[in-house]
Image (cartoon, rainbow, N blue to C red; front, side):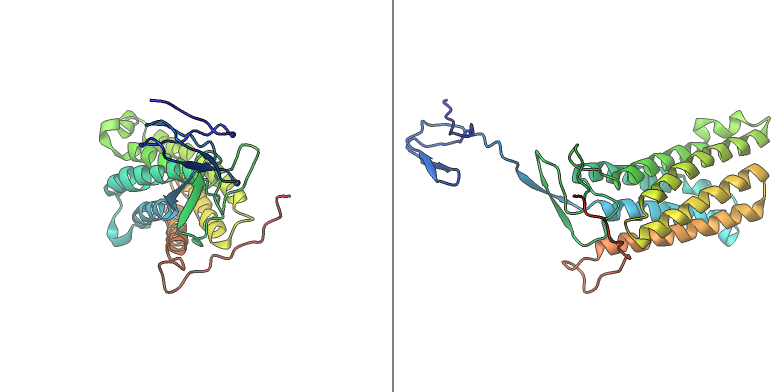
Length: 274
């Protein structure tokens, strides 16, 4: 087995003696290469990755929709433990996976469904909607999906009896409400930061994170004050956040390539990077 390199240091592969390999703009040929000759091309290779945005948005929307219905006590449901499956596997695992794929794609908050596939150079990450930085690209869609995937899995531990969270506060139930309120306060802060990051993206995402931030705020106050009315109001804002997420996910899914119509998201003009 032998190797041969061209002027640019790339190495080609041949199975047959005498094959010719053309490289570069000038069409230089390396003829009569020995058998099993390899050529390594150092230029970036394009690969196709499907848009993971709808998966993350629908996973978040589905889990949020179910829990918010429980929070407003729809159909008389006051015990939210039936959401554990949605929290672990849909809002949690599926959304977390979407966040990991967003890191690979390099998607920013500006993903509006105007594409269905992202072409990513394997050595120089970039996508049509990513924001280039000195590090290559800044992925902000990956951050909410991954973070909220973790949120849903963490939230499920409060409800699952095997984790013993509720049992630990059996003698001091008021502390459990305060503990959950503190937990929600941290996510109110995180969501507010995400809200600030959407202000130059589109109206749909601004609405989503605004409603979600209000949800955390009201649920937090409801836990601290043991006020059922405020808690229900938080559930109402949660339903609005779920609706915004369903709409934004549909806007990403219904593209010119696969749909008879598209959904507007109210894109906001961005400043030039240069």
